[in-house]
Image (cartoon, rainbow, N blue to C red; front, side, top):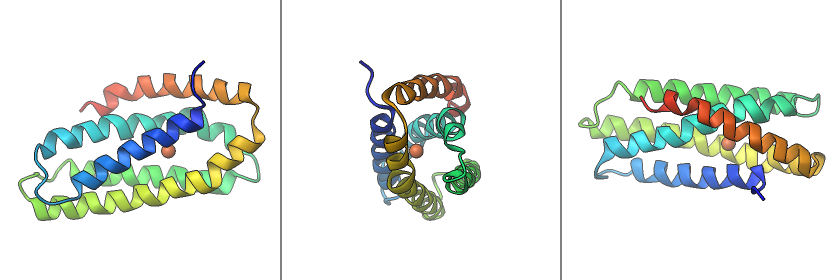
Length: 149
Ligand SMILES: [Fe+2]
C-alpha cells in the first residue's frame, strides 16, 4: 500500500530543508549541482501541492490559510528565479539569497505542518487521502521538466 500522502509531504519537507541548510552555509562544494537538485525536489513538490492538495482544502475554514500558502509558494518561486541569475562565484550574495529562501520555506512548512496537515488528517477519510496522494504524484511528475532547467 502506498504511504499516506501527509507522510510523503513531510519527508519531502525534511529533505528540502536539509538541502537548503547545506546550501546556505559558506564553503559548500558543488553548489551549482546541489542547487539543481534542490530545485528538482522543491519545484515539483510545490506544483504538486498547488494542483492536487490545496484545491481539496478550499472550504471556508481553511481558505484563508490555503490562499496564504499559495502566495508563499509564489514568493519562493520568485526568489528562486532571482537566484538563478546570480553566479555561485559571488558566494556572499548567493548565500544571502538562499538563506532568505530557506527562511521563507521554513515558515511555510511550519504553517503546513501545524495547521494544514492536522486538519487534513482529521477531516479526510483514508480513501480521500489516497486519492490526493495519487493526484499529487501525477502532478509532481508533470512538473519535473519544469524543474530541470
Ligand atoms: Fe509542502
